[in-house]
Length: 322
Image (tube, rainbow, N blue to C red; front, top):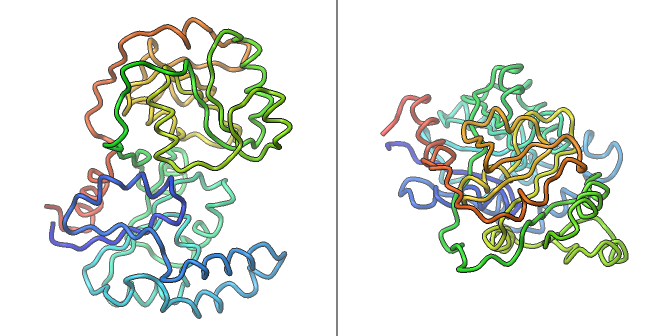
């Protein structure tokens, strides 16, 4: 590879973990903190919460903090900058256009569907400037807006090894957003299943009442620890406009786990295996035996989702593949 690649996934620990394997490449730097001082992002976030203020003050504020972006002064013509829809909302249009003019390759990758509120600012940027490449994990978004489609990037965390004995029949780790009722119904339908459930955005009273283990944010490596200790992963979508798959499907394939999901897109997934992946329209269709039965799961994963594969695709399109 001839180009240097700087990846800005955003401050979210989940997005950072997705690029873990890319850190092995000598010409790639994964920048976990966009700004030199983390307090800057917190200040911007506070302004975002004020109705009307973000739209009015956004570009002047971002221009003020442009010089505080990590490694931005090191970037030269020919370098490739990869932004997620999360990280790019903190970068001014002026800086992006300046970088582009100076020969820097700008890549935008949507890790959320365009319909997601977290993708709103990035989507607006695509209308105001010419990125060298735009990618999306969502096939329908990619087709509709003529983006390049790429699987959700995913890295296997090497320190997360399969235990000698599974601790749980099934696990769920995610936010509420309408999932609470679904999980309560699932537990009632499958009373003998030993669940590990961590659900954010519920009260302590709700957590205790429904027998969930946790309602706290846990880092992604810890979350994957529960995945490898479980027989089956529970995947619940609540956005009817989402056609892409969540991380749960990729976790199932990479760590060889069963998957129970209400996302019909799973049937179009190249690694879809009916013996290991079960689609249900509602929780009443859940099968205890499928969740609990221990079988040898092997998707024969070939590394398709690796960020290394993604980087190779990017560099081939900008004309400098290895």
